[in-house]
Length: 352
Image (cartoon, rainbow, N blue to C red; front, top):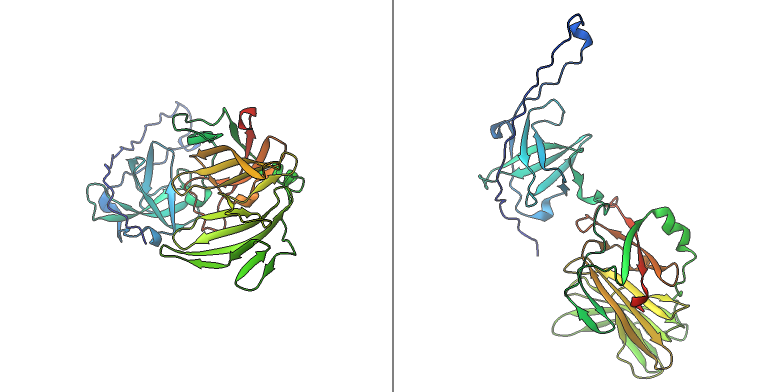
């Protein structure tokens, strides 16, 4: 369902732009002194009317600024008339054109909610939603955690169990082919008849339907470390993906992971990371116990300030360090040129 954007109730704060007088030292030629650029203050009436934004899906991109105030130009040039407003966190800057040094946006006036104007803003003040960065973000902020079955909704920092930090793309690339991840590959003994996959006690249908949704499954492959066949599932109710591991040797309801399973071959530990539908990303850690043939839940953390970009990008670098791809919470991932960043999770002894 398309989300309807309501009027923005904000207060425009006009800031006067005054021209400072510059004194010319006695005996100095006037044309040898750089003259200040005259900045002309704009009024609301100086801007062209624009169509009101009623549907966010009609907006090509959204802009963000970290400055206390922002400048609205009447034209896409530095010497155009300027209106300055307070940059409130509730302001919405809807971008429609990406120009050389400016963005063209549609802005709804706070005290005139039915009136929208076309303004131009400098790229020095604004960042496009596809280019937002995690630099300066508290990557260790969390909403909740669960450690060995015990829930914790009070602690809002992950550092007791895991520390997250930014690395560069080169660092990720250097270890990508040297990871400790088990390679999960298809088991040739698993038979697919066009409708379901089967092996011994295992039978997983490609499509399933109930009163709530339609479910689809896809076979991934076999994990020798965990003695399981892995499948990825989706449903028509939401966009969640879930990964399930099944035994084929006996009846099994399966064990579900929130993201693609990164199986550490040395520790027999499975890590996963995936976007959380409400906020941030979910990280899980579980250990496979061959003696009980079960998974033991070790750690769950809901990180709040970044989104995992690709759950299959999670790789084990050492027995306590993992790398993965991520992006800013508000990144427009529909833009093929959107910014992807690389993060490191370093686990503590308390995680195991």
